[in-house]
Image (cartoon, rainbow, N blue to C red):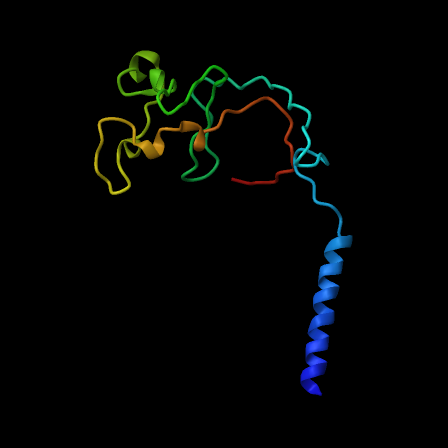
Length: 142
């Protein structure tokens, strides 16, 4: 009898938990209440920040943000236009920051003559900044 009561209680609890998710408030993304399968309104292009000398990082080990627009930047499997200014051969003449030595090493620490394939797609970590209002509230303190 105790086993049957326990099984019935567990069953009712499961049904109750599942029912609450049906009546819960919907969760919206930054796209608003547009369904994932629908086409949403394009986000307007914002004016990119252009900051001489770069933008200070806000926490240790943060990848530096990009202090200029990258609208015409191309990063494909065969081309990385970031390196036309930031590569070793051009950084001094272009007055651009050269990638750190860590970008010229494999995961195992072997030194390379070119950017590591794991670091080739710059915008995986480095992002441009724009003059715009925050999409969500943020109270981060450095």
